[in-house]
Length: 232
Image (cartoon, one colour):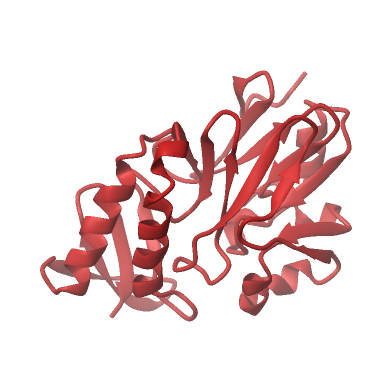
């Protein structure tokens, strides 16, 4: 019997709810793909194998600690090479990295997933677009009613805005967005709301409150759709 934290989306798609973060299992006719491996789930591979007998691979949307707990069970991982600068990748050193570039297609067997680079939250943040269904698995950059980390080394608000504007040009191909945090799924309109809020922060038009996270002082900007946590 599958773990109760699995939520079935459709016959070939599941999400796993892991204490404020989620990861996904996508299957095709011949292969399965685990999209991230959670925060408190070193057994993420075993959890996925409860649902499928297909050969299983792992793709990390990025390397923040709440997305890589189960990576050690995989001999190789798919990830953007731009994420190799991430300090958290010390947890992935035993794995062979299969680079995934913007525009690459992973075919699970009659299910094509297109990689879309979304740098800003991290340099190598990557989304996957299911070309047939229009489902976009967005990682962390897109959230409704969430808290998007934009503070610390290697994060860039300017790059984030650029990524979202580039993604907006694909909006007609996206039917729904499946983030790793907060509301899920969300509508495509969230992209415009996040762009507007982030640009207002850049212009100095959004009031902020000071707070602290992991011992680091940060600015907390409530832009309505979500909260952006930025460098002080």
